[in-house]
Length: 336
Image (cartoon, rainbow, N blue to C red; front, side, top):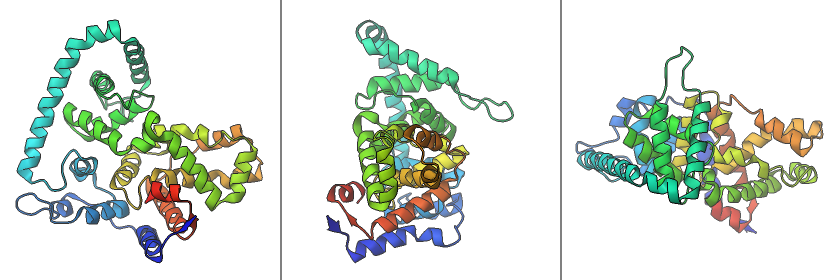
């Protein structure tokens, strides 16, 4: 067991301090433009921008460009001209990949036994997707969505298609205008959040660390969950696979949480503290009603229409409190 230094503890409290004051308005286009010099280089540090995104969020008018920095689509050190070149290159590379896919598709259908099954799963998921707003206006092009998902599946051997990816790509389509932007932002997002939403890379580790945090922070609740079925926490896998997108009341709330996860603030793998905070929302009900594992899962699945700012604030408070305690080295390494 290791005790975190006073400096780390103080830093944790500062990272969570925005919840103690009135939230400032999100970073808008005027303020975002002021972050750059005349050549388009960022005049503010990456850390400064990420802390402000954690505390305040992004206005929709700057979200697309900011996310290109957060995901790694753009380099933080790039100039405006360099970013224009990157956009052009990514567009051309996307077109090349599309052409390649069209050529090898017959071969995949004949030789790749999982391809047809995956294609059918994608088509089925997309068919269920509600693609209209409250006024009946079509939000996204399902054909383009299917194309991006199939291309992603063929190109990405580490992150095979899983349910929930179609909803993620839809959110990227709503954010950007061009298909190549949706495709590449999704690829970079998967890389950045591999420990939270790519099941064959990191979801199991998230669940193990969530168990550790519950044991450290709330031994009574941990004992109850253990007694009612060891698989209760493990069954929360969809929270991580879907990156919590089904828990919120609006697309803006999903984007708000995701951009915080991309900042790496206040810590790495912040998604585990988000999951712990969500579990705390059902804690009293679970204990008072002496819920079984299945009933606990039902209560967790009923956590919908959440407010992203409130959830982020709660998770930051968990982080600040956790930093005051003795933390096992594996958990410390996972977060810091």
